[in-house]
Image 1: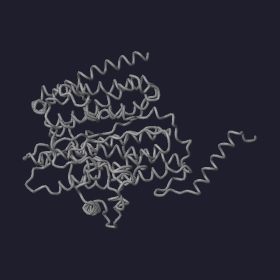
Image 2: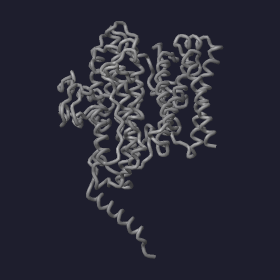
Image 3: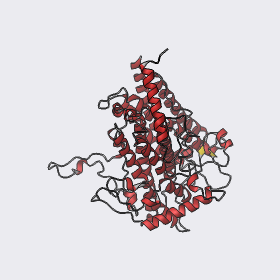
Image 4: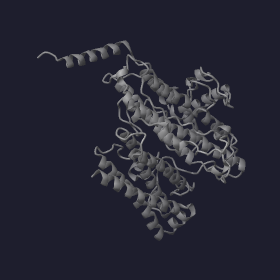
Length: 533
């Protein structure tokens, strides 16, 4: 039977792909022979999403571990500045994560809010994933992940220098010295055989973005037909998500030239803290980029890379501190702490977990927040609650992209409400983490360990196929969260230790508020489901 015109066209496309593959080869990593270039690019972006998510979580854990109760006013301002700076980086990583999702949508690929996808991600993860308190060791890992190529240090962007440009207070020679020091310390920790393979064992985020930019820029490997410009309206935008990171609007006076003090949302509030390091006072610049074309995709990727560790990719010199610069400032101040200074962090554990079976498989790398001791029960419940709200956040984020296919972006909709819920869960995670680091866990060593937010991933992030089933899953998760809160209050009636911990931390007020809000959310979900039937 002769080939049909459609089958001949398909054969031509396959032959063209083979010819292009013979002409071209990856610049850095080898593409698998069973993958097309588009498939390879999607894999790289999927890995990029995993890396951004993992870094954001590790940065948040380090920030939450910081203890603001310091002896002197100067010391307290310094460590609070560290927290502000790291949280700014984490917020910017959230923008990176959403932008990478947009590029996956542009290529017709599924969004990905997961973490760790071994074996695919092993050559892209900057360092082994681990939730640890802020220390010189964790800062060394953060610096390595975000550090630029040595040749690019001091390279000025090709565009103009903005009026507010302020150069880093750490000189280029000092930055080079810190990079050498960090690589030396990490080699001692990870390069066990002493073969000097630290660059092969650990990876800069810039390496991955460099390869993605190289592949997506090449029309011979990624043709124009791979980009679905119609997906632009399905992508996350600054108008959607950026509002959660910008200041509240202020009204002008009758002249239209000055702020009316009566309408100032901060009127009567204490002045913002004064940090000794000016970088700490710099607010996060959250970038959420959409793309409809190859050029826009490349521009978005370069903007993300420039914000992290590649200043030579900036269009203009804005003076905006890179993630690398923020971390080396903290590293220098941390290094200069005096022996008599109080510990700048809570004694939170490495990789806390609520799963006893998982802990038994990783005894040396995890700490189990158990249920066997009265003083630990409160922490165990709150760790479970944290995991449940983390799961809800990831589900809301994933669902917002699903709804973007059918919900108009410029009209009130279910999508807008889901995004509103996502912002609420971000607040919940911050609040619960603040409670966890003040709650004790069982510790035979006498070190006075506190709990920490476990950030445990759910068994699946896949959404049900039917819309109604998605809302039913929300109903299950919120009902489960409500049950955990109820168990805390029930346990406190019979457990004096729990009762004292809840009173001391003020956790009871938060739990009651959360339960009231969840009751309202369940009623809203019931209405959504009823409308579908």
